[in-house]
Length: 227
Image (cartoon, rainbow, N blue to C red):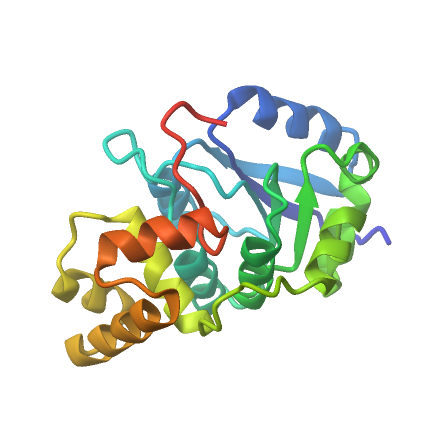
């Protein structure tokens, strides 16, 4: 489907070579225009505030800023972006095929999940963008198969609990009051969400909960040497 209106695309990835690859592939489609690129999440936040974007391509393992190398809290940011920009479609392109993380990302509101090693889907990226722009959902075949297979050892965390843990991992030094304010919650509500997550994960504190959630693929793992 080719529309008269150009589809405005923004890209968030911390590897310039990946961004360049997307720019090359999308540059051959006259109905698609890349209007913004960013290598840090804080940069993207500023761009979204001033640049109309229809489809956002993003990796899950992107630092928050030059000062904060932790992966951005994707499970908190996707709902926030969709609330602020209701017409936005989010397409995740990642090397991670962990079923629990994939499920959490889709439940957070993403319109698609492509695996970076899915060469067929990457080659068809313009068509995928047109599909999610038109309200469709797109998953790499391998991602779709994993999404259908629920792991027997997954703890039964709610999407909101996973969102809170994602934010805790992104800002490990933040106080509970800071996190509650960022989420627009009362401190007591945040404490209840965390305590419930601790019980379901079988841990006793925030750092242990983050570590276990990352190990199980419920939230984005932190890789200090990149990906």
